[in-house]
Length: 111
Length: 111
Image (cartoon, rainbow over all chains, first blue to last red; front, side):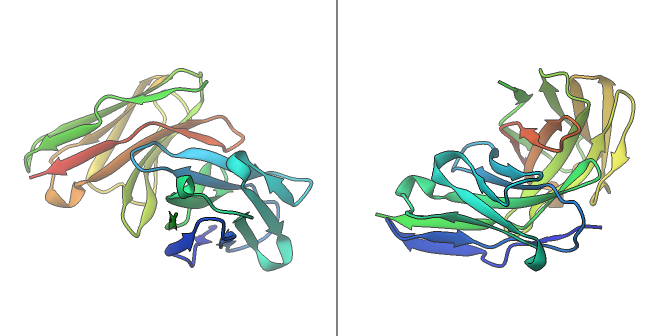
């Protein structure tokens, strides 16, 4: 079965700094990949998803992720973080009809 | 917009009580899921359902059961609540594409 690793458990940044959150999944083939975000007190919502095609995927709020098949990675990036990006971020991979989630990365962006 | 609602945002129960958590989705999705979310552990799948009256065990089904009598409603049941079931419970629904839509969560405390 698939598994997902998010190695950065807690990331602290200053506003305007670039951010990159890591995500690796366990084995290849055709994969569907997702990043979800949970803002404080809010429900999980989809940031972006990759099914096929262009490996650079753009999502909401200026986020993007790059699917690198050879590295089994789907890292989330944003050129310039904002205080409002403070949240918990979850990477997920589809496994049959389920999603396998990573343990999450807590991102804090300070003004 | 897809809407997934959960019956309670906060719930406090005593050890040994039977607890029902209700989830309703309004988008005619086939699949529904129950997760628990704990700090540092991410989202762990408890049970899921592909169709009415169908259920499948997830990764941590022990101590839980589910019921899906109607397509739009998926209930999670704690037959005899224990303190180690204190957690945030998230319901989600999806089509076959895999993208899941989440409810706001129920924070359950078992005393």
